[in-house]
Image (cartoon, rainbow, N blue to C red; front, side, top):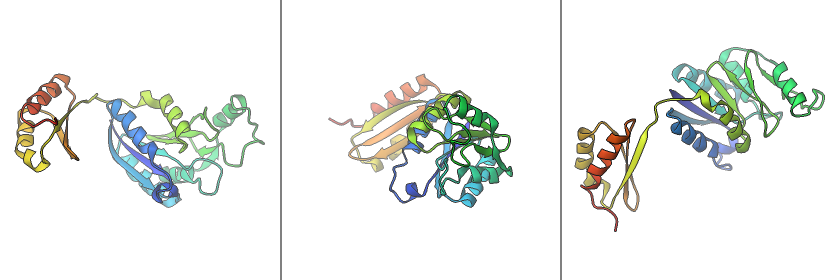
Length: 229
C-alpha cells in the first residue's frame, strides 16, 4: 500500500508551526508496512487543495489530508476535497447526530458549517474536539490539531496495512565517500535497500521485508567498516 500525506496550512509554510503531523503519520504508517511516497504541504487555498488531492488520489492507494477543518475563514480543506472529487458540501446527518448525542451539541450550538461534509462521505468522529473528519473514496481528511489527528487516525489505522519492513543501522566512523565501494558490494551481496546518512559518523540503514536478510547484511557490513570508539 502506498500513501501520500498532505498537510494544509499557511502557518506550516511560514515556519510558525512545526509540521509534527507529517512526521508522526509517516512513522505510524511505516510501522504498519505502508510506503509513504509523498509528504506535501500546501496553503489554505481551495484550488491548491483540490489540485493536489485530485492528482494524488489517482496516483496512490490513499491520501491522508490534515489541517484546515473548522468554522473559521481559512478552514477550507473540506471545500478543496469536495472540489477534487466533484461533489457538493451538505449537512451530514450522521456527524450532526453524533455531535448531538456524544458531544452534547445541538445544531443550534454549532458554528455554521461544522457538520457540513462532502456528499457521500463517511464521517470520522472527533472525540478530542468538534470538527469531524471524513473518508471519501481513498481520501482521509483529519484535523490539524495533533491530539485530535492522532486519536482519529488510530480509529482508522486498521485500514492501512502493508508488508512490514525490518531495519538495522550500522554506524561507520569513516567518510561517506570512502564507503562507496563497500556500499555497492553490500547491495550486490544482499537483497536489501540501503541508505547512508552522514554526520559526525555515517549511519547506514539496511532494510528488507526479511528479518534474517537484514541481520546477515548488517553483520557483514559491520565487519567491514570502522566503528566509532
